[in-house]
Image (cartoon, rainbow, N blue to C red; front, side):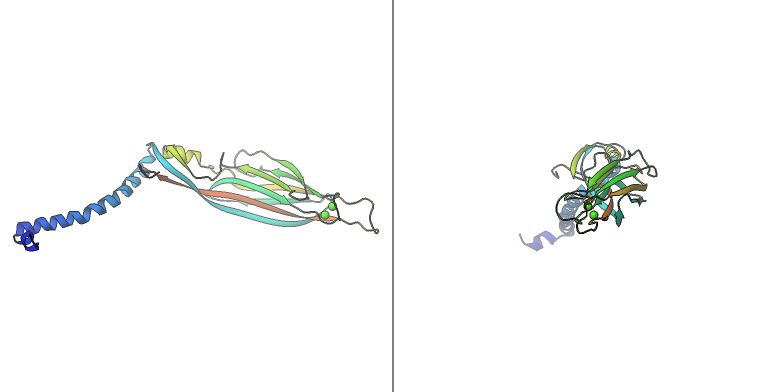
Length: 224
Ligand SMILES: [Ca+2]
Ligand SMILES: [Ca+2]
């Protein structure tokens, strides 16, 4: 049988055309189908249909860094304004300092820090902490706007609503974060060569807000 046997009548011609049509259209149909199903699941998910989801987080950091040189007993108020539409994972405040003004160990300066969360939306506890300005010293404070946030990817079984309720900061953490830093300068009370070796310290205050967008993708069987 050659090609003319398939095309020698109008009926055979139309059958061939139909066959070729389906040969072309079926692969396209099956290639598109999972996407259509996935889109449908995203839409129906909001009505509470349980599914398997790949969950990940696209993070953005907002940072603010200030450097201050303070003498003994000096205080410095630092403010961090956060206005964002995104979910907030957590807010972190770090004070770092490295006292190398005297030779040898001892007489290490330190930092006292006290927060003020009264101008922030949500229920946050104030923190008070101190740390020395030696190796690995300083002060760190952290507040979670989203409970149990780690930013790790995982697979979730349940509804889209449950997912979105879990990963939302509901506007908590927006506002003005504040911390007061008090400098403690220590130096040898018996000056060597008649001069005070250490009279101040350089402190660096770093605020970081980690915000995120929730990325959820329904998993089709065999896709996991
Ligand atoms: Ca010192
Ligand atoms: Ca110092």
